[in-house]
Structure formats: C-alpha cells, structure tokens
Image (cartoon, rainbow, N blue to C red; front, side):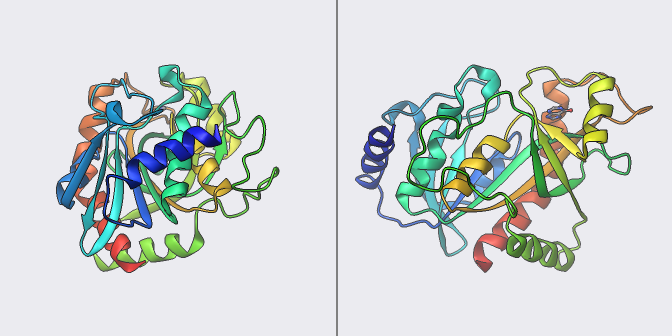
Length: 269
Ligand code: HPA
C-alpha cells in the first residue's frame, strides 16, 4: 500500500514544477472552480499509476496543478465514491498521495440533501462536524505510519478554517449555514424514514462522499474545510422525487458562491 502511494507520488512529482500545500476536491457540479485555475497542468487519472478511474456522469477524472490567485493548488476533478464499487482504500488513495506531495490543507465540496428543516435548496452549509455512516472504515487494516492507530477526531474540520470561511462569507454577503454532515454509502437517495433517522442522529445534511476522505486527511495531519450545497430537502412535508440531474442543477446554481469562498480562503491561508 505505502509503496503504491509513494510510486504514484513520485510519478506526479516528476511531472510538476509547483509545490501546492492546498488541495481542493471538486464535488458534484462544482467543477467550474477549475476554470478559475491558471497555469494549469492537467493529468488524467487514467495516466496516473495506481489511480482508480472515476465513472459517474458529470465527474471528469483528472488532477489539476496550477494557481488559484497567487497560490499553488492541486484540484481533484472527479472523486471516487464508495457506491461505485471502489474499496475504501481506493476512495481515499488520492488523499494519501496528497500527503506525500506535501499537501497541508484540504478543501472539499459536495452535494447533500438537507435533514435540517430550516434549510432550503441552494443553501451552502459549512461542515462543522460529520457522522461516519459508511459500512466500512477507511482506516480499517494495518495502520500506515502517517498517523496514529487511533486518530483523534475532535476537530475533523479545522476551527480556524471555519472561522475564516465565516468571515469571508460575511464580507462577500454570502449566507453560510453551519451543520453536521452524515456520510452514507448510497447510491439510493434516502427514504423519508431514513431522512428522519439521520435528523434524529444529529445530522443537518446527508450525502454519499467526503467522510472517508476527511477521516484519512485527519489521519495524515491534513487540515480540512468542507462545504455542502443543499440540493434537495429530506424534510417531512418537503420530500419530492430526487434525481442526479436535479442535484447537479441545484449545485450549479450555488457554484459562484462556493467558488468565491474557496478562492478567497485559498489566498488567506
Ligand atoms: N442524499 C444523499 N446524497 C445526496 C443527497 C441526498 O438527499 N442529495 C445529494 N446527495
């Protein structure tokens, strides 16, 4: 496992000239942040040794090295979801490669269904904490020496980044919710009873990604900021049929706000 990670990192290091400390995972419908990156050097997942290949419609699989403002960054366009059939080791492989590349900060975006009755479609939610509802833990198995066997998760989402994101949002007149994201395997959206259960468990929004990557990032000592776009409402009385297309449409509408926050934040850290 470690050799594969190092082999992949060595392959990438040989091809890039930048030294990014911040990586961004571009989630559903948030790919337009990629257009803001300058001096791009793109590497398709299919060219990268040991990298899985992403299969979901709307996710283009490539790493983008370049600049966002004046900062070197690494963006992942297309992520690996557990529901696609990848193992947890595959889903989180890129995070470990990032660690080998010297990444210190990780920004993640995703689409999520609201379980908090105050939320509306198109809202942005700063993830303050998460609940791991995946059936398999990404750190199960032999511990890799990037971090301890029993990692602390008391601040899975950096309080410093949360504070900065809130300041930026205020300055830019963007409304940001703050809430708990519950990560579940999918690929079904939830039944009304499941949305209710997740609300009772303490979640404000539910989605099918992010949690595995965030756990591994924490294990690697990478600081995390996460933002969800609320694309549908899992709230009694407001539940309607959901489709992937509608999720993407709602995520697209939130794109400019998300991009602003991420861009500003990258340049402040
Ligand atoms: N549930 C799970 N994942 C999601 C949802 C949802 O309602 N919306 C977008 N991703």
